[in-house]
Image (cartoon, rainbow, N blue to C red; front, side, top):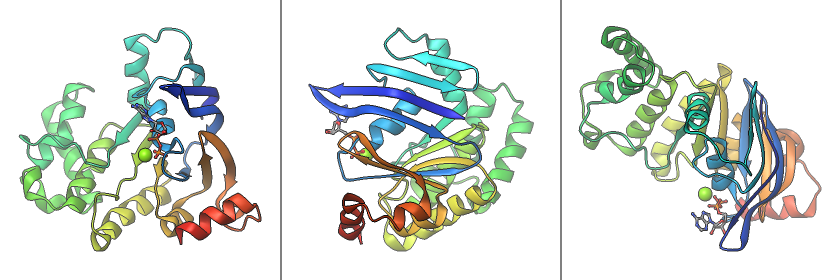
Length: 243
Ligand code: ADP
Ligand code: MG
């Protein structure tokens, strides 16, 4: 279980995260929703220490971090082994083929042999429907294909949680579904996912838990059905504005 407790993050005097305490259960999918600027990316990036909150606690298995103290680079590496971020813009290595992109982490970071990493990469590329493009370069891929490779690359590191920040927002709507289908499959296989998305239809399908952020505060945290059937005026207003 991954937990944040009493987390604050201020940018230029403005509170991006304002006393956030939250739990992300293992083997479940949590979807983070909320208006633009509500702190969703800051929250997600804090889970991967891409953003370091000003104060609060991070708790993951036996790893505990006090954000108000200095964080060692060993701790940062440790956290990033357990949480892997998939970016909006894919971030594939342009000079490496698709399969080499997926093999890079297992070889360089996990110390696997090339043969082992290659076998794993093939298996993961097939899982995301990209086995036919193993030898292509990122520039030869559509956005949806690139994002599926990025997901395979994350999976190759066997992280306990995969974090995705608006994974389809750079994609055309007709291509979006091919990525969402991969995520729905992963959720079904009980890969722990934490996803920021504006696609509420997808959120409703994929999420076990919804986190609703408003002005850096948690406006709701709970089961998906409860969120979508809420009578809370602010949630109803948000849902109406998004539909
Ligand atoms: P969301 O992802 O929900 O749109 P963000 O987490 O990106 O929200 O941003 C929350 C608030 O923090 C916003 O007011 C945003 O302008 C501010 N913010 C986020 N990142 C930075 C940054 N690196 N520097 C300054 N302000 C930032
Ligand atoms: Mg964002």
